[in-house]
Structures are given as structure tokens and as C-alpha cells.
Image 1: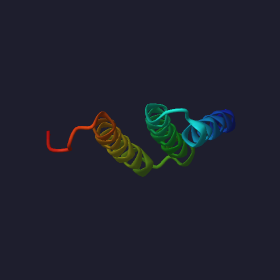
Image 2: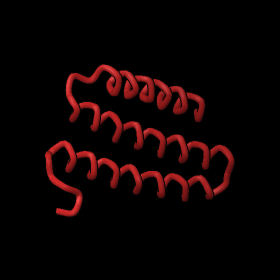
Image 3: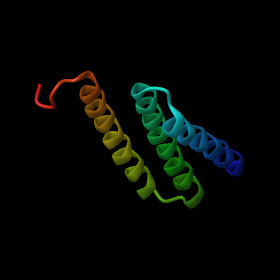
Length: 85
């Protein structure tokens, strides 16, 4: 069953990479980068389930927080505002 989930997340990864490369606008690419971060958190969760180690959940939590902060920073940059506003 984990193999099926891994294949699904891999397909999502490739679709996100396609949208990042061929996105018609910068906001589309930003959303694709955010979704790619969520997919990577899913990979960490699956890895934690398959190995039984909770270290990967810590990695997933850290990755999710960094992905969120990066998306907010990129959205502010695309909006034309400075980071200290």
C-alpha cells in the first residue's frame, strides 16, 4: 500500500515540476513550489511509516515551516512589497 502512495506522490512531484517549468505566470509557479513542499512533507511521512522512525516526522515539520515561510516571502516579493513591511 505504501508503494501505491509513493507512486502517487511521485506523479504529483512530476506534475509540480512541469508547472514550475512551464507555468504561464509567477503566481502559478509559486503555488507549484508550495505544493511541491507539501508533497515532500508527504514523502517524509511515508518514510517515517515505512521505517518506524519518528525522526522523519521532525524533518517533515521543519520542511513544512520553511516551505510556508518561503511561500509568504515569495508572495510579498511578487506583490512588490519589501520584506520588512
